[in-house]
Amino acid sequence: MKLPELNTWQSILLGIIAGAAVLAAVISVTLPDRMTPLRVLPTMTMPPFQVYVSGAVKNPGVVVLPVGSRVQNAITEAGGATDNADLQQLNLAAVVIDGQKIVVPGFNEKMPAVTTDAISDSAENDLQINLNQASQKEFEALPGIGEEKAKAIVLERQKRGKFSSIDDLIEIPGITRNIINQIRPYIVID
Image 1 (tube, rainbow, N blue to C red):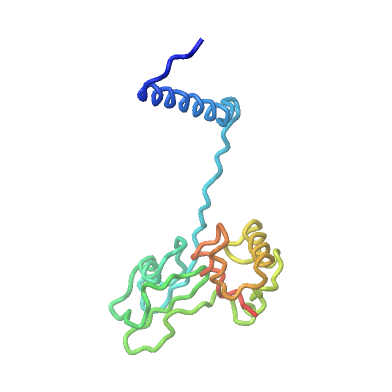
Image 2: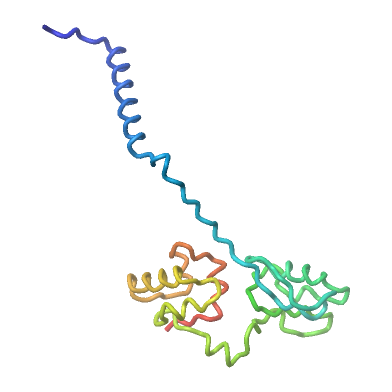
């Protein structure tokens, strides 16, 4: 017995039905079991950090800021600039880092606009690590770098040989520009 031939539209319709059946089978096989609970992972949020603001501000002292804040945000958190403040000497758009000291100069004062006095100079030299030689534990001691990121840095270094710049770390998943800016004072490259 010979099967009847299909018209063009019948062939198209049969193809669509067959494709839908295959797609439904693939979806049903790949979907997780309804009895398996979904695992929701927490989002990564960076803790706020502290910056010391002094000089010509209304409330000098330590202020708490979110990661990615600017010098202008730090001055605002310190109550704002006084009438005597010479803001032209500052880069108000500069990103601040944890432990930074910001001095707002008054008019006719020549003061350093932004310094990083998070730690003393002698202690800072002890905390500087070489990006191309540091161990995983040394990386873990840096702000914003935990065990997983430290492990990823070491693995990337083993893969590529050496880093030519601290900015090469941006290629590692989980390491953002803000993290790089936080650890920059503690990194040296040979």
